[in-house]
Length: 91
Length: 140
Image 1 (cartoon, each protein chain N blue to C red):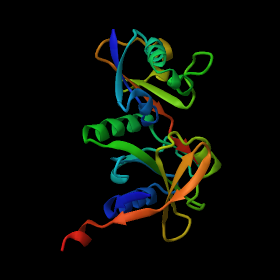
Image 2 (image 1 turned 60 degrees about the horizontal axis):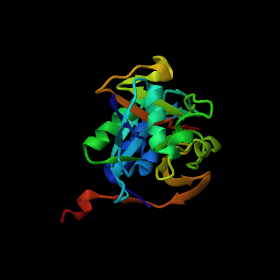
Image 3 (image 1 turned 180 degrees about the vertical axis):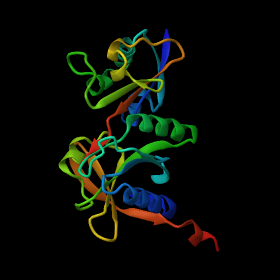
Image 4 (image 1 turned 90 degrees about the vertical axis):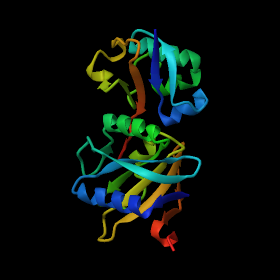
């Protein structure tokens, strides 16, 4: 089922400048893999080579951090918004 | 070049002062084509530290949604340095998330706060000029 994915500013140029894209998937992992299959350049910025979530990336389903849910196994349903956010940090 | 209004400049510095003794942080929004910051979002520093900062990701998400609803985009981040110069630290450089962003640092080391802005692209730091626009100067 289609789910809206909100992209961080750093990835929007790879999606024609769009802030959101619609992709298929029933879990966060499926949604992210589907997104990356459409926009391969996003791959290494979102997922590690072993398929886990990059440590400097936060993913939310609506207002919930998936690290506090079931990570990439977190289910999503039509109408949910999956948001990808870079960790913004420094010293 | 980073353009911002006096209101945003003063509000950002005030937010940094209010965050002492910890580092404070927030996000800047503008029309990227105009390179002008017209809105700012305070974000909690979830690192709660005088030496490092981490923008609360939920506050980041809400700022991103609000900016988009207003026809704006997040174009940068600011944070304070409580005891050092207004220059990016090695962790600021290593973790800069977006090469198109402005990286604003407010040094509170001296009595007079110092605000500077940088571009950080692939680990290379370049300072940019900061132009503060006063609305009322144009009123007459």
